[in-house]
Structures are given as structure tokens and as C-alpha cells.
Image (tube, rainbow, N blue to C red):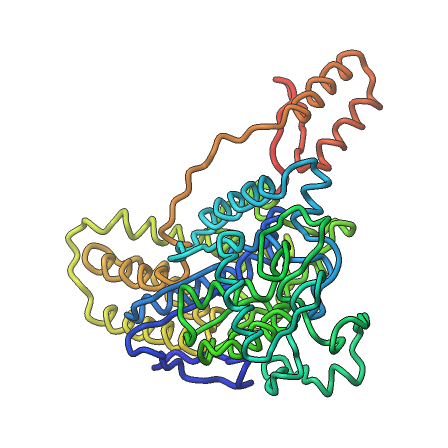
Length: 478
């Protein structure tokens, strides 16, 4: 069966047909490195990783590029011509650091989290700040071709009305946008819909020289320039979250095609939003989780990965702690089966022809689900049913080896069964240890109110303190 994917551009399922036979080139919108990435970010990154793993398993030569946005992503980014403060500079100002320090710190966090969740390493992770010359060159091409214009002392803007296919990805056509969109009018622009390719702002901390004045790139031009450098003007797949469809990806198409570099991406794949406990993630609601938050609660990377990939990427996902607990238990059963099979694989039992046939059938059913638009929920259903049957009558010897090969085949995509993690020694922060010591002192002095308050403070940070004959002990609340 051919891999079929829902192409946001065509609004339908399509067979993946490579631009170059035997090769797949893929660009993934990566992190804006101004804070710890959250589980919603990683839902999109994991979808890209699943796609990469499927393409690899099907025997294609794969080139995967995931960008690192370290300049130009402004706080109000739901309109094409974004406004507000640069997200990195806002974080740098609040922490009293240089924007480049912020970028490098959170890029390191992203890579560490990616390793924890066992993402296959992309072939390139280009940083926007390392590709300013390529962006300037593409902006010059757009000016030459009549798709962009210069506003002296302000910057360079894309002339949206010059690109007749604007709206082809999102459905936000020029007619629809003009009839009712929320757009701040800037009289200096030819059209309120035009968006910045290069901005001049003396207050911006990250600046580079350009033919139009010292400034910084717009968010959208970054991905157009970097994808062209590493994948060429026409490539196979572009991925991201559904919030990227408009304006970011729509503007990328206009820029890249407008610059005359090629068709740009042929297939667009987008992951739907992730909710937490049925609500949009928000720090003020207390339902905002980073990968590090979940690790601190005692969950391991393969458990978090399993939970975030189990739901089909084109369906909104409702993440809950109860759901994560349940997914962790389901995964534990699969990993337990793997361990039992490994423990009996050296026994003398011969292969079982009937089992080989059954495993082949399950393998084909698993692959069919994966090829059907990455239907992970269906594939996991196949895996769990076969695992249930194997656990009921555990095969041994060569038959166990065959069963393990089936699990390994599935895990080439899932990456949760055979991965082993180094479990770091759990420790408290200095503040948490101080609270435990203060609580112990309060109990000795019979200051029960203070002891109870400190216990609740620790509980609020996921630390459960229990008193026993040998003193207080603590565990993490999961």
C-alpha cells in the first residue's frame, strides 16, 4: 500500500509521490526558542518524527530539515503582518539577558527534550540568524519580480495583491480577508494585507545590514529562504501545527513561488490543536505543561511520547493527566511482554508456522493503518490485540524471536518499546529541601500549623511528604 496523507493544499487524501523517485525531502516548522517547548509544540514535532520514521522504513532516501526560529517571531502572530515585541527579546528583557543567550539556552532545552522523546535527529537544524544573507537575496528577488516594495526607513513589504494564488492553502483569499478580517490599517502600506519581509526598528536588539537599512527579517521569509537553501525550490512535504496554516505557511507559499524558486512544497501536513483537560493551555489556568514539567512529575520520555502520538494527528487532542497515566500503564504492558519474550528467546522451542502467519497478518494490518494517513490509533489497536494474544500463550525460543521481530518492526515507527532511558537520581531543589527541613523542625516544636502549610507548599510542587516511624519520606506525585 502507498503512503497516503491528507494534503492541506488539496483538501483531500493523496498518494505520496516523490518529486525525485526514491527520495523524500521534508521541511518541518521547528521551535521559536524563547521558552521551554510545551506539549502542544511537541505534538507537531512528533507528527513530523512519525512521518520521518515511516518514510525511512519504506526505504526512501530522506532529507529532513527543521528550522530554529531565533529572531523575528513577534508576539501578535495571527495576522500576516505580525506586530508586537519579538518573543525572544521580550524574554531577554524579562530575564535581563542577551537575546542570543535566550536563544541558545532554549535551543538546548528543545534538543534535550527531543532526545527524551526519542525523536530521530533531523539532517539540518538551520537557525534563522545564520541565514540572513539568504533572506536578503530572496527579498531582492521579490522586489525585482514586482512582488515586494520598499518603504524608506520602514522596511520591505510583500505586495499581496501581486500573487493571485494567495489563500490557496488556508482559504483566506484576498476577497475574504478584505471583507471582514481584523487588520490594523497602516496608511504607509499599499494594502493593509501586505506583510513585512524586512523590518527597520532602531529599538530591536538583533540587527543586520541590508540594502534597505539596518534591521531584521520578517518571520515568514526565514522559512522560505532556509527551505530553498537545503531542499531546493520544489520539495515533497512541509509540516507544522494547524496554527501555522495562516498566516505563516500561506505567506511562505507566496514568497517562495513569487521569488520564482519553484513550486515550493507539494504536500502540506498539519497537526491539530492540543487541549488540556478540555481547555486551551494557559499558564494562568494552571494547565500549561512543558516536557520538563511532566518529567519532574515522574513520567519517562517514552511514556510521554506514547501518549502524544496515540491520538490521530488530524483530530484535536485532549491531554489529561488521567489519560497519561492510562497510556503509561498500556505501554508498560507492551514493554513487559517484550521483556518476557527476551527472557525465553534462548530456549530450544522451534518456530511455529501458525504464529509466523499470524504475525505477518498483524504486521500487514499495522502497516496498512500507518499508510492510511498515519492512523496511529488503528495501528496501536492492532499491536495491542496481537500483544494480548502473545501474552496469553507466551512463545519461546525461535517463536519468541519471531514475536520480538514483529514488535521491533512496529517500534521502528513508535520508538517506545525498545528504548531504554537513563533514570537520573531524583533530587529536590534546594528550596524544597529547606521546606522539608523546616517542616521537620516545626513538628519537633509542635508547630502543627506551620508543618501543615509547608506540607501543602511541597504538595503544590508535586512532592508528597509522609511521616513514619523513621521520620519523613517524600515521593513525587504523578
